[in-house]
Image 1 (tube, helix red, strand yellow):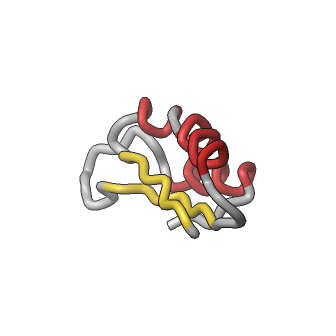
Image 2 (cartoon, one colour; image 1 turned 45 degrees about the vertical axis):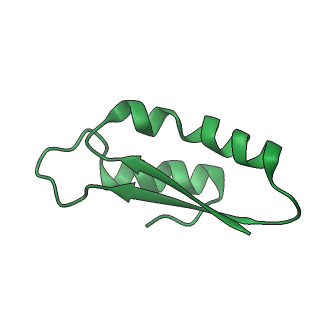
Length: 66
């Protein structure tokens, strides 16, 4: 099993929801699984979440980041 936790780099609110999505996944998964953190809309000029912020959160949560 795996989960992609996708957030919008142009919306800080979606970045703030990551821990909630991880908790929800953890409560409902069956067996072991992998979680990947994915920043979406990186092609947009306007960003509210920097690459460094994404990497920092992924490292803190122990997740691979794309």
